[in-house]
Length: 252
Image (cartoon, rainbow, N blue to C red):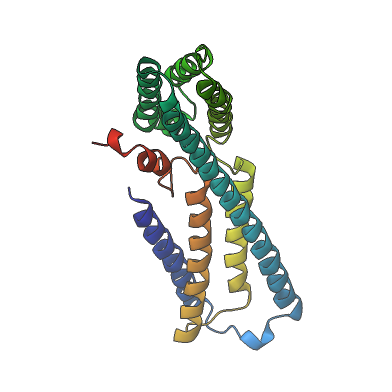
């Protein structure tokens, strides 16, 4: 099911539930007078809404930061691999071709197989580690024969280390960002926040029903954003795009 379809269904369901409850409540209790709502209930409703808005804001900020960090890790890994592929041109043809072949093999594995493993099982693959070891071995085992090659050697070693570091960061960011207990609090808080609307004795007027529906739709949309950003490598972002941009020949 498409993420956008999930969003639309969630928003429509939230709006429908609130409107139906308001209509049923008004039908079963037609004599309620909104002017008789105690001041303490209005104060509690305002307090609960403010607290829940703060929690929603912190949750969205947290998953957005995690998503941005995940994209930065992928960009750093792809850029380091691209630098290796370009800087190795000063080496002899057989070494240069071997390094570039291993880099292409690693990138191809990441975008076709390892990303699926991250999405389905939340882990990297042993084959990816082996392919990275091949790149490291090709770069570090070569003994420069000229001063020009010697000047390029250390930067290449540093780029291999950058790939390894970015890969480790990518592994740490695999999976959901929000713990289950936080999701329980968000959903429970949404139910309470929407439920407090009925404590104010909402009537069946068109204006009140529209406002109640928009309120519930807004909360559903915020929860969808948190869910969509919660797993940065499987939802909400074209995470492999940096690899495909820097290695376009592998997409053909």
